[in-house]
Amino acid sequence: MSSKCHVSCRFILIPVLARRFAASATGTAIGLFARAVTAVQATWAGCAPEPRQRVYFANHTSNGDFVLIWTVLPPFMRDMTRPVAAREYWLTSPLRSFIGRDVFNAVLIDRRPEARTEDPVAQMIAAADTGASLIVFPEGQRNMTTETLLPFKTGLYHFARQRPEIDLVPVWIANLNRVMPKGEVIPIPLICTVTFGTPLHVTEGEAKDAFLARAEAALRATAPAERVPA
Amino acid sequence: MTAMPTDLWLLLLGLGGVLLAASGIGYALAQTRGADDPVIDNLNARINAWWVMVILMGLALTFGKAGASVLFAFCSFAALREFVTLTDTRRADHMALVAAFFVVIPVQYWLVWAEWYGFYSIFIPVYAFLLLPIIVTLRGDTGRFLARVAELQWALMVCVFSVSHVPALLSLQIPGFEGRNVLLIAFLVVVVQGSDVCQYIWGKLLGRHKIAPNLSPSKTWEGFIGGALSAIVIGASLSWLTPFTPLQAGGMALIIVLMGFFGGLVMSAIKRDRGVKDWGQMIAGHGGFIDRLDSVIFSAPIFFHLTRYFWSTV
Image (cartoon, rainbow over all chains, first blue to last red; front, top):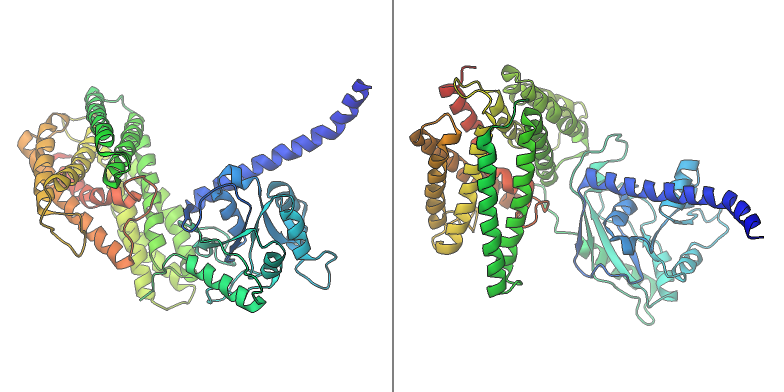
């Protein structure tokens, strides 16, 4: 009986292990590439790099944003952290699906209310209930404007109301939009920084708009002092 | 590739001895004054970084011209990245910046490696100077145009053109000095960095009167004079490495020290203008690459041209 299992297990295990190995190697390669291009520096301004369950909410100007956060997290934090990403983007090709699902273990949510079958907040709650930390971009889309931030979507508030004990950490990603502006093909190797701010929580009875305004202000406050062009 | 001169081994051995002593003193200070004193903490971080820099430098020079070209090309890349990060680039600059990083740096160092003096001396001041603004213009964004193209040209002159004069020393041909040019690099780097280190030490020990409080709060008259005199002594005592007499070596060291000192002030002025303390955080205790290279940037081309004019046959 054991030998029978051995044979059938091998057929299942080898592709699974190979896929896992490929995912891990790809993750390492992507991290090294991100470091080579951006020499990314992490600043733990408002909290320490410790294995606590957190929701990192960040500004969003580039498709590489979550890669940069993922890269600067120490390995013991990285393994428990999952980016929340757009299903309709990451499932459009086998390569994207491999990177999204296998490499980054993303929580894939559908941003199109008319097309989706699952509630994004419920998916985030389910992921958090397994102990995972999450990376979210509350602006909901890449910011292509000259504004510092776009108005936040409400998902962060609904999540915070249901899991009020989890730290919400504002994360400011600086310069990545200069490395690879939209429409360019070749990145330029500028130094990027990722700044982790002071965690916040939704307070008892706090209204949606008040909380979102506070979260937005906290994220703005996390940004390193901007030099003003003359 | 020529075999590394024995003198370089002797010099590296000597530097190893100095660093051993420095590490010993740093360790003793940390034991007696407490390891959490930020000044001592920074001192030990600097000494550790020096170990890495001396070992990398020694390794590169054992590979001769190719090693030196690759090492300084990498320094230029890291420096240019720090410089451009602090400038206010726009999307319209993207292609010109791509060209600066991925065309200008490799071409400049290839020309240096190929010893093509007539081209590497004008490639950035002439060709990059004229062609990059044309690439920027093609995007049609005229906002702050002059500032943007001027900043890019400055970045290239400082981070690539100047720095490339260090490996370019290998292309000089000095009668009676054949196969020993790598020692010119060693002389320049030891005098420049020795001057920086001695200014730091004299400044920490005796520094009272600030030279340029607006530019660099840590630079004092005591540090500058003590450091400059120490570096001239170091330079004169290293004349056995060079084609210079002790007096000439001391004079070269004086010029290197002055250029390095004022170069440090110029680069500080840029940092103050940009509102930062250091150019980066790549080298623990020192800041960025440019913080370590600023005095090399201003002294290398002058040292190169003086040596070339008075000693070299090409």
